[in-house]
Amino acid sequence: MAAASMIKAPVGQSPRLACHAPGRGGGVVRCSLQGAVVGGRAEWQSSCAVLSSKVAALGTQSINGHVAPSPSPAPSQNGAVLDLVPVSSITGGAITKTNLPQPIRIADLSPAPMHGSQLRVAYQGVPGAYSEKAAGKAYSGCDAIPCDQFEVAFQAVELWIADRAVLPVENSLGGSIHRNYDLLLRHRLHIVGEVQLPVHHCLLALPGVRKECLTRVISHPQALAQCEHTLTAMGLNVVREAFDDTAGAAEYVAANGLRDTAAIASSRAAELYGMEVLADGIQDDSGNVTRFVMLAREPIVPRTDRPFKTSIVFAHDREGTSVLFKVLSAFAFRDISLTKIESRPHRHRPIRLVDDANVGTAKHFEYMFYVDFQASLAEPRAQNALAEVQEYTSFLRVLGSYPMDMTPMTAGSSSTISSSDPSSSSS
Image (cartoon, rainbow, N blue to C red):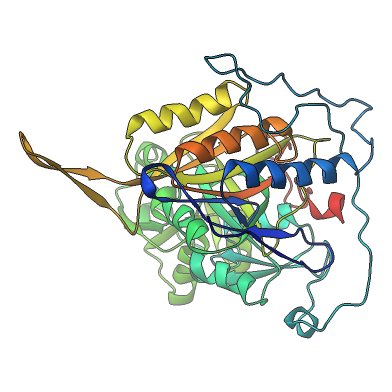
């Protein structure tokens, strides 16, 4: 095993451990604890102990004076305790950052402001897009920066053009946005929060245009699918055409003066591009909600005084579906609820060949698994679950441990309501 190396981090950042260890089947075990790469049970124990001591030193503050106790460690079949870290009640508290002089960095040339009116937040789309509204809900009064592609939003944060990015990852009707799951793995940004936004679609056209004159409706493919039945019930004999995004469709109709074309977008898009709302609330399901994640260059310090969610991604080499069962059991034994599990093809190894003299050569698809679970990385039960998961996998990375969005899911939710923004509570 290569010797672990400790790199001194700047003030306000956690130290990073980097090492590699041989995994099962001779592979390389890689695991990330909020961006720090560790390997082996001994190093997991060391890094988890450091994190536990850090959280324990935060103080005894809690919400309403109540701190939820952690569950007891889960014994294995032979009676041995699987936990690497002693399970005990841990309290969370506010973090006090010491403002010491630091070397000049690129951040000083383009300073990242604190949470509030000057925060620069990248989103995909054009003004009037639902992503812009989500950015306003996540960071009230921010300076929203439109990007033409999802990857551009990632790069804007990495290159210090923006301080945060707010991007969709799943919709209650359309399912996951797979592109962003792939980009989460490709880039090194951290999830620092989430926001859930009710989607309210409108049918927009140029002023004076009647429904009977329409021959075409354009919008994002998911928006078209979410309004399919309503458009049919309205008696519109129109062609549905896909566009890059909802607000972009409205901008295109207005810019080209298309009087035979309508767009499905938000009411804000109608105001921005001088269009009329022919029909309001045309989504087929009133419970249409999109979940967005908030991305930053550095992770936040996980806490235990409010509901947290943790997102991970892992892969395995040989053991097939039995590995997935073992991974899920690691959470089930510790009473940790999973909120999502998603499989995506392994980009570098999409197909594995298995030779068998009796039946020939079989082709097995390789997958990465994305999992969200309801627990903070500061909780010993979450640390112990990940330590056990690391034993079964060839690759494990923590994408982020962040506060859950607990705002009510109502259609009238204001875009100025602050969501589960960690900046206001941890800075």
